[in-house]
Amino acid sequence: MTSFWTRINRRLQNARQWYEGTPERALDQAYDAALMIKAIEDEHFDGNPISNIEKKYSDNTFAYFQSELKKYLKIAEIRLSEFKTSRSFFSTTDPSASARPGMSNRDRERTEITLEKLKFIDDIIDRYKPKESTSLSLVPISQTNRTRTTSLSQNDLLAEVQEKKPAYSPEMVPEDDSILDKTGVLPRSILGTLNRIKRDLDPSSEQQVVQSFRTTKAKTLISIRFLLLLIIVPLLTQQLTKIFIVSPIVENIRHPEQAQVFLNSELEEEALNDLRTYEERLRFDSMIGRPPKLTGEQEVACRAELEGGAVDGATLPGSTISLSGEQVRECLVRERAVELAKENYRQGSNAIANVFSDVFSLIAFAIVILVNQREVVVLKSFLDETIYGLSDSAKAFIIILFTDMFVGFHSPHGWEILLEGVAKHFGLPPNRDFIFLFIATFPVILDTIFKYWIFRYLNRISPSAVATYRNMNE
Image (tube, rainbow, N blue to C red; front, side):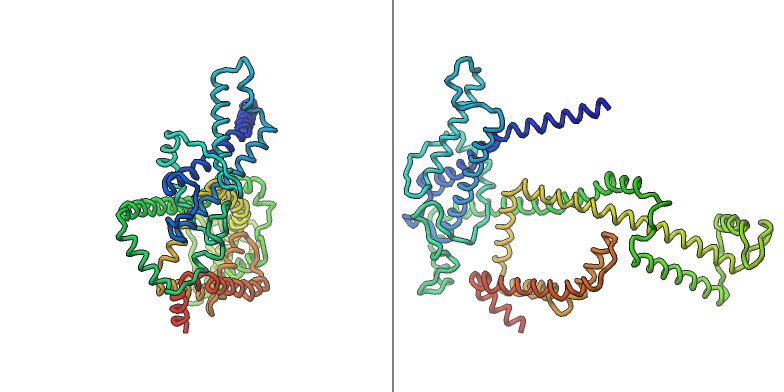
């Protein structure tokens, strides 16, 4: 009992330390976001604010920088607000306390670092406020190099946001001039070819190609690693919690003698049909001259059961009398009934355990998503580039495959099997009315979403893929 309370106190102390570290953690995250903005300015805009006044980059490239700027500014503002709010609840180092006598050198250094970070964050945020122009404090070279070599390589992999709304600066590209809505005199493919030739003739194109390759490689590795994490962590959580936590608790609470054998009437009907089929098979074997036989243990158990009661009006006097065919069949049927009862009891306990273990699995999945927000954005960008980078015929093939599979003519059978499997997983009786209602509504909604996506996005990004899809569908 003492060790138990000791562990509880230790966990409470760890939780308290984590909560008390919220202001410092929020300030560090806001500072990292400001460093990311500064790194983009130094690397791509010669230390100037992120804008496209000089038309240095194309619309699509600048839209990427614009989305990065919006994201990091939002992170910095949110974390800075969290820092200010949390300081009113937790006891932390006061930046203004540097003027007080008796401070240790460590506290004084922490105060100076905090003030420097706050000043740098404010300078970055004020730099992009509308109708305001403030001076920019330079980042220490060591910090800038550290950011470029560590976090910049991954944070530059964030997704290219499709909405092109102006962000924090009037010099940026307006929403009506986005790459998806832009039209011109020349076809977009010809303009793309000319831009590619211009890029190939650029002396710095080799460095851009190398940098693009490194970015793509890092993005692929991060995406694959995060996909495996999304699959493995929930599965392991579901299995481990089911084996070591939920199943033992269910077995201790649900006793075989008192618990109901069948969770629902569907399982009971299946067990009765199985028992009936087994009994008819034994009778059929006896009629064709192949009577069932008992093993040594089965025969001893059968005699022990029959010696205590009457069978066909006669009582077995002892173990020397051989069993009749009807008695053998009755013993085998009884043994099969006991096996079916145990099997259905295990299925019921397993279904109850599945409910709680799946809840733990969903919680683990949500935690992975919340903790790895940057990886989610990188994965979204990777999937977008992979899907939109396919050829027109490949896009049309994948669209037809998924639409026919989920909303096509034969899809109701698949949905029916899937819903019955889910109901069996949780120990619920398959409700035919619900299944038919689901099949009648959900595929229609899914088909509408597919068509809207094709009309709204794919038709703008790749019109030729839509034309190929229509030709293949016809």
